[in-house]
Image (cartoon, rainbow, N blue to C red; front, side, top):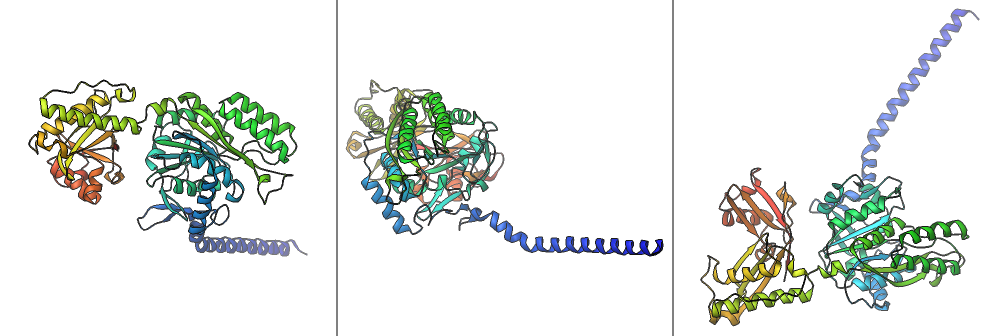
Length: 515
């Protein structure tokens, strides 16, 4: 064969190879264009929108870890709670609960949820370790809503943004939350035992660095209040024999309750190295370490509520078990600094006696306060009504006086200095009803759409003009957000009705504990 023919065949081969490469590339591009929307839909399965345009994380494990049918789910949880016992005399600040299927760990989880049943929490901070994804640091969810067969629970996006802004530890990543069961299985229990209105802050540890839990504890210590609940989701031993699991897990729970972090770390390391079948002592160990560190900082006291393992169930095998523990931390300092029923009653009684004394004699009541909580410097409003009609309302957004002094002085102002009404008379005193609103520190916002009707009080300010509405104004009037803000701008601040849309208008929000 001549060199010329060889060259010709070589050129033909190269040409055919190039043509085949171009064809495959072109075909791949066409396939990608066709499948891209499908792949996008797949990856955003948890980002479906509801009728309000909010991104919803759909239930990923309903029908697996717990019943998918609402009535069946309610019945199972209520039966588990009915069989659970609780000696709780105050609201826990944190609970540690298992996250296996309800048929396995439901009786243990119910012991923790019975301890918080009927309590009022503003936020529930959910902490666990990812069982589906491998990543660094901590992932906070970015959905607006989490949905279960029992309905929707709002995600506290404001708190998540706040946490993400406190250093580089917390990243916002909703995708790692979409199919993970660890936090989801806690939602149905929370929806049954807590009054509606709480919000969740879902946080997942990934491939945690050694000190990530300590940093998270420092961050949570800065932002948590007495209105918050920390829920740590973790199972215990995986998968020793029954007797070994009981021994190891009871020691684990003791060390957690006694806040012995170093002892817990040693116990985990030793057990995982020496016990046959023990793959992990606690699959949510970093959440548990976070709770212990936080308990040390704030002064919480631990209490073991219940222990069992999969071998205790009718469907379990005692040769290879998973352990489940329920534990609660109760606040000392945090409990003292909360506005509980007794302190709220004291403030209402102070407002009533102050008004009666001032109207009858013109004197200011001499009040002897016995609570450190009432010495805190906070803003407050006092509202007076007769037959559900406003009779006076005066308050301070912030105050340099103690809370009890602010309530006392605002009660007098509401009865005598509200320019919309004549002073309250002695004949009206038996008809008066009192409402006290204790306010959080106002925070500036950049977008009026961030305001949540019924939850946020709002301050608008431009130049020397300003106005304020308490959160309950929205509930009392039934206004839309635009109507609420329009009335605030026009009636209270004396500005144009759409002043809230003007970038020159400063908008701040606050919350109120109303009683």
